Image 1 (cartoon, one colour):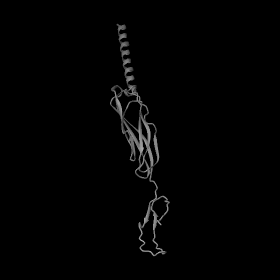
Image 2 (cartoon, helix red, strand yellow; image 1 turned 135 degrees about the vertical axis):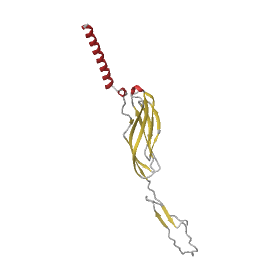
Image 3 (tube, helix red, strand yellow; image 1 turned 180 degrees about the vertical axis):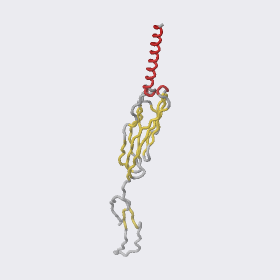
Image 4 (cartoon, helix red, strand yellow; image 1 turned 90 degrees about the vertical axis):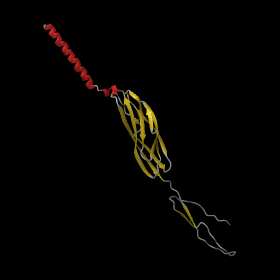
Length: 196
């Protein structure tokens, strides 16, 4: 009788210990710990487009990457937004893990001055249930800066635009005043010629 009772105690203790170990394992290893993510996003933290003439543009090609060890239901989809004066191509894309998507950022100033902002990629995907499940939304950003400038140019003004000398006697002269001015912001050079 005592031996049977001792056996029951040992069996009950073993069962309790196993239960504690299982619960402890579940507590220290949550589902999302099985799903590893790595730093991703733009290949650089900032992009400087330098000085660009108003009305023209300058482009920089870069890449956006997305790294994960998670098992996703479908490839990630991304959308890219850029501040005023800047644009991106493509503006939306689909990507798999460890894939690098080429992105072209373009600065096209419409006015003179320094323009700055942040370009943002928003990546959405969905993981399988045992790795956390549900959608995952990640935002990656990079700063952009560019300077727009107006081209300097000379603007010539001539007044009057025509002359009438009337009747002039032989060997006599008649004078008229021609005014030439430059209202632009760059120097003009030239010459004046008259028919004989």
